[in-house]
Image (cartoon, rainbow, N blue to C red; front, side, top):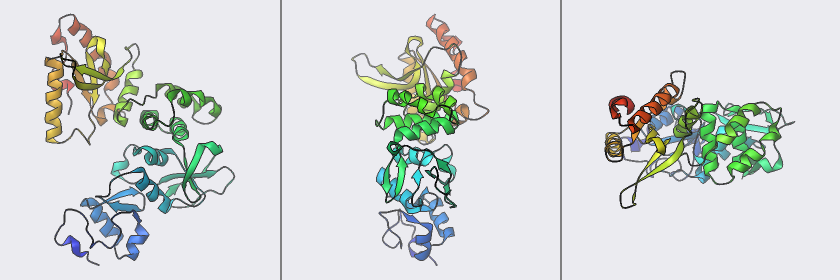
Length: 335
């Protein structure tokens, strides 16, 4: 079947599209409407549709919201299941597991211990122990793990460099405090992953503004004998006007460290804005700024833990008058 609206290449999907524009739909629903899997893929690649979860799509112009995410999950989550881990994190915060933009992973869905394991190609599955207070209704008899339970589980089961980003995002919802998160860690005593959870829970900070920033902060914490980083450091003009915020740094050393994610720091205009802002921070306010991107923070080739001790030494020398001690900007403002 040919989709007639594609011949004139409209900016967005319009009423000629045979599926809802204001609600998510499944691959099966698309097939009934005459839209094949190959056509769905083509529409995603051309920017007309986006995949929400595995097997569920929505018109690209439909705004993201928790309601939309919940409706998408409910279309494919098996009855009697509990949505948890990264899928629950995505539901509550819009933040998904690392690399989710490169594919569409299955839902993280479990059942209460003692129930039969789910068998569905759209979901990961297994058994897990939940208290009644750990879950809330999502749709029908499908439930979703609460933000705090999701943070505990990510802290136990996800790799620590990505787990901290999800935990920070969940803390930003304001539904629990860091004190509450830490206060009940020992309920998981002797359970799988509790050692990592004990390590990560005290590091959670809702002031982090992205998962990359969270990962960068964790790398900093893992550098021995460095001063603790401050978050969202304000920089004021002479009249007291707030001009900038620096992701991480040590104000006493005039050292700032920032994470440039692909979404907000890749276009020419983004780069021009970043360059002007950082030039002002260095030339007008005497900060030294180091910049890292995803490949510098994640994976076996990360460079943060090697660079930060050097940056601290350079900042101390700069405070003594040796500004030439800092690496050239081209090496610190990495692209």
